[in-house]
Image (cartoon, rainbow, N blue to C red; front, top):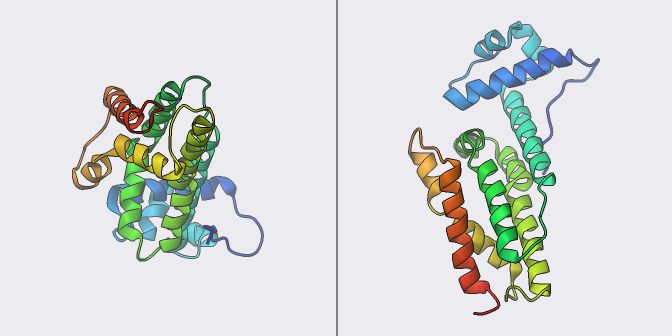
Length: 211
């Protein structure tokens, strides 16, 4: 199922106020989690009345799903703009991996991942929509890169999708778990560069045409 934003019937509401509500709710959900955030807090942070919040969203669950829908759309746009450069496959994978890791390891995306993990039982559609918009889309894009590399004879595999998963695992390693269970952990550009280079070198040793 696709994530569908909950909007009441009737005339369109003030879009600026709606955007302010979503922005305020997004920050509060990130900081405190869904369960601990009250509608009154969202209204105060957004600079609107509680009545205005309810005029735009039926309840807190509707606000949460709309926040996730916006984040999913943002991730969709980010991967749609990903440019796969021309060059040898190891160079292409270095560029792809750097863009992928920089985006996926950003504090906001990691915080969203943590929040969705805590709310999956109550909001399974939100988590599934986020997965399709980001990780699954990226996996398929990398698979397409590898299919083209197989056709050029640069790598050897009869299962490009599995090969793409292997490379993603090399890039990510324990990082998502470390972030999820370690407060304040962050990954900078130098660390990302090392992880991407390490992953590509091992991947090429396993799948390169000289294996």
